[in-house]
Length: 254
Ligand SMILES: NC(=O)c1ccc[n+]([C@@H]2O[C@H](COP(=O)([O-])OP(=O)(O)OC[C@H]3O[C@@H](n4cnc5c(N)ncnc54)[C@H](O)[C@@H]3O)[C@@H](O)[C@H]2O)c1
Image (cartoon, rainbow, N blue to C red; front, side, top):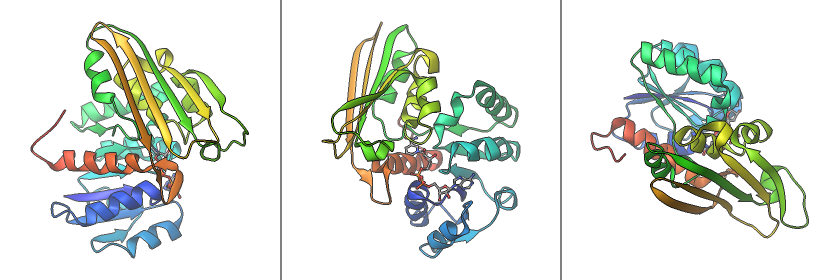
């Protein structure tokens, strides 16, 4: 399989290094808006070369996006129109209903898939299954060290309380998990989100609380920050690598 990567930052680097070691991956194409980032990553890999997205699209089987919401707007439809699958990390971009519907329609037309890794959060599988029946309430409580939210606070402070749509608009880089949870469960308008900045916290804590016809769910993860980007949880990279494996593996744990 040949893999294209858009975004060579913390997650793109972790995924590229893992993919470089996978026997199923023959070739990796890299693109970053900052040429220095793709060059730095390319030097660490055996199977990689650097090319603009438009140039590598005809060569690849799947594209992995780990760049920004803007990159999703710019490239995702092109990837699907070229008949390739895409794995999207900047899931917050999908709060835009018209973009999301356009991507879904394009994927259907070209018989392609849009993979959304569960990312930094745990419990998405349960919410997805529970959403088959009526879900009464889904809430995400995220607690982060203030610096990773770009805040300076002396004590535990609730910096956001509202729905997921507003959360991903206000914190486009920090709360992709709210977007993934919304799409798995009750949507962007009904999913409740609370974001807390806590100076005592050294890890990134995500807690999902849901109840409905199935019963009650409570899933919590305490993530270590990614060593290359303290705003990202290392779990997000691991989840991305697991999704890439899923794209290739015959055995699927759903
Ligand atoms: N789904 C999740 O759970 C989850 C978790 C963490 C991060 N994320 C998201 O994944 C993305 C990557 O995260 P990261 O921690 O690797 O970030 P990062 O800042 O370390 O790396 C992003 C890289 O993408 C590049 N980039 C930005 N815009 C681009 C564009 N339009 N075209 C090409 N390259 C572009 C940047 O130059 C940078 O090198 C972000 O959007 C982040 O919000 C998702």
